[in-house]
Length: 132
Image (cartoon, rainbow, N blue to C red; front, side):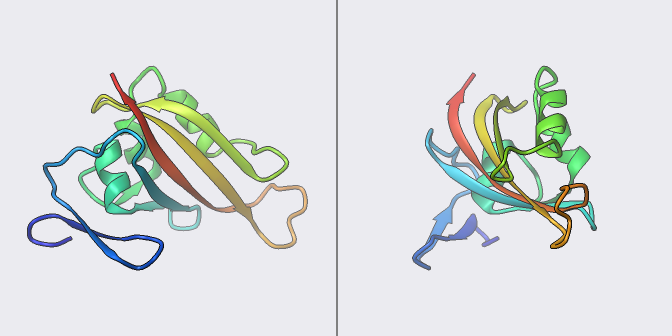
């Protein structure tokens, strides 16, 4: 974080600043990672703004608490649930801050776990698709 806002790195390594009082526009995409071992989810500053998080490091339950009550169980089911054959899943979620997002998840398993029973990490994106 900078004194006036968050600093992001784009895919071409240019520095992008995001003032803390600016709400991301529809179409903005943030990124996150969740480590099963530590139980900690980390997100980039844009993802943090989209979901309304205070910190860029949170427990999975803390992230779930930011999700609108109507979609909380769906978030829990999909974010740690059964992926498709490409080890991916996605869902539409409403957050308590009023943002509607499309979350996309890529699941990683232990290298020799062909039955996909030992989840190691989840990485993904949060795309702001609307505000309710």
